[in-house]
Amino acid sequence: MSSRRNRVSEEEINELISKLQSLLPETRRRGAGRASAAKLLKETCSYIRSLNREVDDLSDRLSALMATLDSNSAEAEIIRSLLPS
Amino acid sequence: MSQFVPDWNLEDGFSNGEDVHILPMTSQKNPMGRDSEISELLWRDGHMVVHSQTDQKGAGRGSEFKLIQRHEQSTSLIQDEETASWIQNSLDHSMGSEFFSEMAGSNSISLDKLNNNAIVGSARCVKFGPTIESTSYKEDSTMLPPILQQDLKQPVSCVGNGNALNFFHFSKSSRGKSDDLVAQLSTRSIGIQGESHPCLKRKQRDTNYSKDQSEMTEESLAKKQSRNRAAEVHNLSERRRRERINERMKALQELLPHCNKTDKASMLEEAIEYLKSLQLQVQMMWMGSGMAQMMFPGQQRYISGMGMGMARASVPSMHHGVHQSLNQAFLCPTASFHAVNLENATQSAHLQGSQASFDGFLLHSQACISSPPRRLLC
Image 1 (cartoon, each protein chain N blue to C red):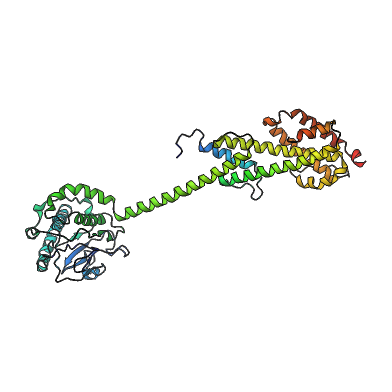
Image 2: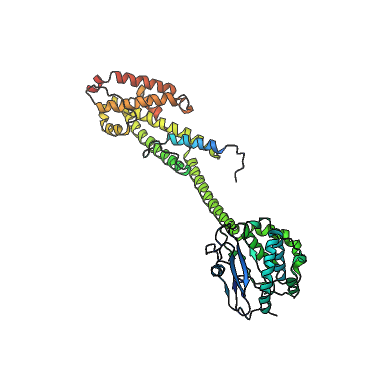
């Protein structure tokens, strides 16, 4: 059982969770009330995974695009900076 | 002498299978009527009847109780002398002389009949009503009327200890104190079964009993049990919920890169930061690819995909008449990206390194925007 004086109070955690919720894309309900913590965490995980996939796709495209560029050009430099690796 | 205690609603019954159910079962409504009504439980002709003071239908009301006494005549029911004397005393103390005299009267009447049936402890005259509040069950055997006392001197032996005296079948509705009185009657009888001279011991047990039994009436017991069960269920569901949350936290931790923290708060903070940076990165990459596509019309097959992927901010399209979708696709990320960047870049440490290149990129993209048409037309 958690003691009364937690180092990190329950409120802080709730605050963090709602901050997290604000970052998540709410596709279904706009301005939805506070969903359960478990659901939010699950959504966060799936959102992070989808973002990672998106990054992978984009980096593929960027590398393909970069191939057409002169590797010394400024644009190539920029695109290279965008790539995750 | 027959060894039957005329206890009420004894489950094991008597040796000849008789049982005496005097008290109303819990499933019945309170037959005693309203709170303020005073009813009497009288023992008449081997029956227990209810005689209501306000309601003169004594006999009729008696039938409301589950009075089952099968062997009225032959049974010799020996009342525990303890109970009788105790009842007497309690009534003496609480009800005043008026009741006592009345009771004494009925005592004598009943006693005659009871004696015929070898029933000791005749007048179970228990009155229910508001006056009971001050009841204290202090014995004073000297208060007994002589008739009773004489009878009570006979040795009393009771039914085997296995009998469960079930006084609690009294209707508990709103009788409050009256129920307590009856409950205490019953519990007293329980406690003193099998004792020949419990009068003395009663005094000692008195305070204990009245206190314990008042707390542990059947109703409160049941309530406590149900409360305990509810608490258990609640604890279980709470535990399951917590486990689920911990699972999700672990999964989240695995997704976070370079996360060596284990406590919830810091993990949540890291998750928030990581999420922000991921979003930013994706936006930047979109922009970058949009720019790159702008510069190389040959890559147009990517455009539609990009256009669909955009759509964060609505930016007024530049009417160049050329590749509007491309422009929009490019402008959208720019606008939103710009806003996002101003908001996040200063906070996010991840962008520190790429800040310079990012600024350069912005300038470059803006330059591209301002003079794209000609190059695109080529």
